[in-house]
Image (tube, rainbow, N blue to C red; front, side, top):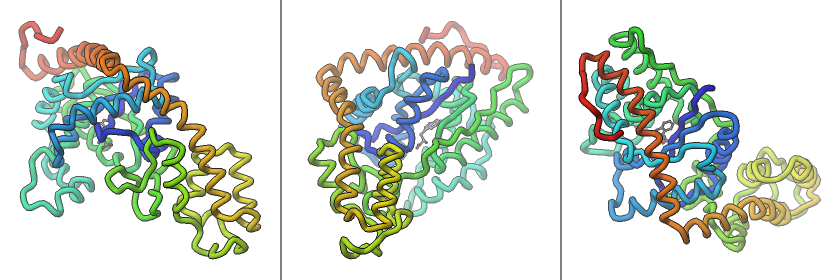
Length: 333
Ligand code: TRP
C-alpha cells in the first residue's frame, strides 16, 4: 500500500481555509492509505515568529487536526522537531541540491523579495520538505497548488541522490496528489484565506462568530438590491462556500434562487451559515474537550513521533552506508 505524507505549519488554530483545502481531505485519506501527517515546526521557524508561543500554536494545531477527524488509530500524527532524522536527511540532500533550483522556487522568490538579508533556511526550506517526504518513502503527497513546485523539486532531489548513491537502494519519486479543492478565497474576496489576514472563519468559532463573519461577506456585485438577479459564478465567496459546505440539493437551490432573485443575498448567507455551523459544531465540541486534556494530546504526538523515528531510521540505515558513512548504534531506538 502506498504511503501518504503531508505537512502543515503550526499556525495555531485551524481555519476553514486549511480545513477545506487540506485537512478534510486528509481525514478521508486515512481510511484508504497508510498516512503520516506532520506538524512542521522546523519549517515554521524560517519566517519571523515568536518562540514564546510556538509550543502553544503547535499544540493547538494538533488539537484542531484531531478534532477535525484525524484519528491516531488510523494515521500517524507527529511534530517534525521530535524526529531529528528529518534534519539529518535534509543535510544529506543539501549536498545534492543545486542552489539554482532553490532560487527558482516561486515561494522563495515571494518571501525573500522584501528582505534585505535572506536567511539560508528560507532558501533551503524545500530541501527539508523533500526530506519529510522521502524519509518515509511516501509515494503520495496531498498538497495544494502552491506546493506542487516543491514536490517536483523533491522528485528531482530523489533522482539526484539515486543517480549519485542509489544503487541498489532507491527512493520512490513522490507523486503529486492534488487536493480536490483549489485555493480557498478569503471572505474579503481579495486573497487566499489566511489567519493573519483575518479573512477566514476559525474552525473553533462559535455559531455567533460564524454568522458575524459571513454576514458581511462579498457577493455578486450585480445584486445591488434584493430584487436584482445574480449569477452564482460571480459570487466569489458565498457560492464557493455553499459548494464546500452545503449538500448538492441546497447548492442547486442556491443557484436557482440567485438567478431568479428568489432569495436575497442575506437569505443565502443565512442558509450557508446553517450548514457551516452544522459541520463545525461537532469539531468545536471535540476541540474544547481535547483542550481540557492537553497531556493526552501530547501523548498522541509522542507516540506518533516514536513510530516516525523507527520508520525514519529504516531509511537512514540504508542511506548512510551507501554514502560511505557507517554509524554505530543509534541513540534514538
Ligand atoms: N510547505 C508546506 C506548506 O507550507 C508544508 C509541508 C512541509 C509539507 N513539509 C511537507 C507538505 C511535506 C507536504 C509534504 O504547506
